[in-house]
Amino acid sequence: MSLSPTDTPQHAPEHLHRAAAQYGTPLYLYDAAELDAALGRVRSAFGAARVYYAMKANPNLTLLRRLQAAGVGFECVSAGEIARAERVGAGGETLLVNGPAKSDAEYAAGARLGATFIVDRAEEVGLLPPHSRALVRVNPALDISTHDHLATGAAHSKFGVTLAQAPAVLQALREAGHTALGLHVHIGSAIRNAQDFTAAFARLADLRAETGPLAVLDAGGGWGLNADLPGIAREAWAVAEVFGADLWVEPGRYLVAQAGTLLTRVVGTKHTGRNFVLVDAGMTELLRPMLYGAAHPVSALWEGAEETVWDVAGPACESGDLLARDVTLPTPKRGDLLAIHEAGAYGAGMSSNYLTRSRPAEVLWEGGELKLMRRRETPEEVWAAEEV
Ligand code: LLP
Image (cartoon, helix red, strand yellow):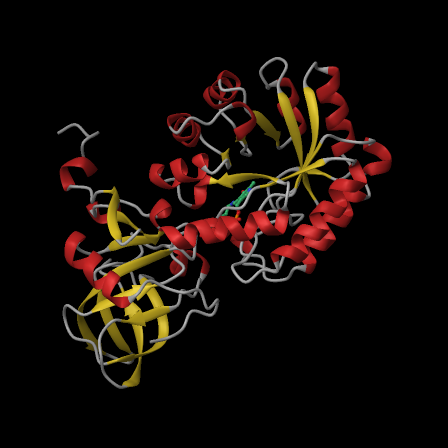
């Protein structure tokens, strides 16, 4: 069994077997205690900062309801996400509406629910509903230590206004009768080097002479699972203090990744130039390895000496459909259970119906019980919106 590099206590093997037997595979299983622990770590590091969960990481209503009950707000980037926030009772102070290309419907829904808007470009000042509350997203134009698809604070990424534009956009908001709450920065996701946060915050602090004091500094999310949260929090609070502002944060991955495990069963093996273990989950259930080259820890839930190096491949007719590469496992046989860890963020939420595959069930392990969070789709549901 390979250990998670983050050393998070994982589900006990007997829970994993029980969940797979009861709900079938592929299956997403979440651990309620780890969900609570992650929020606890965020709260103890960031103190009085207001927490907005970036629900794109995992929008399941069960998770949203738990977070909402714990006093967490939501960052939403689509009409659908706003509808989910409304469904669990968020609005007003607990709702942020963000996105680089908001639709009329998204402005209207945000306004109806009293959300704060994150302005991503100067032209949005004229598009906001009257008397909106808004933050201005700033792109600090740095080299960000993550996969290029996950870097949002690089000069070439599409997000935010430039440092030079930011003070004028705040002023334009005020002149248009909106409430210019402050600045927002989110430099990317799964950031490897904490210095990136330090550099981004320093660039924002440099704007103080031009912006004057502000009510809110939103430091975004992007923390890797091994991140030094107290260190990032210290830096974020320091820049908030430069502006005399309250601190808001928007973690996604950090709150849900480690709680989630993708369970998949071995279908068979194949030896070509490489050793493949074929499993019943793939790119349709967990796209991250294919899209970002993400390495999720994998553990075998069967016995045997670990002697062979395997690639874990899914059932899709695409050669990129691999869940892991070069993992050492005991010799697998059909029906064996494999666990893919740190899959709670951007796993189920990015699963697709490609190949008319049903998106998997999701289950919560809480207080010694398994609770269904989402049942497995049927093929009829996959094509329900289509005409024959
Ligand atoms: N705030 C904003 C404005 C964001 O765009 C995001 C993520 C977050 C907060 C939360 O970031 P986190 O704490 O989760 O890193 N699909 C990719 C991740 C894309 C993240 C997009 N924005 C993945 O699977 O790694």
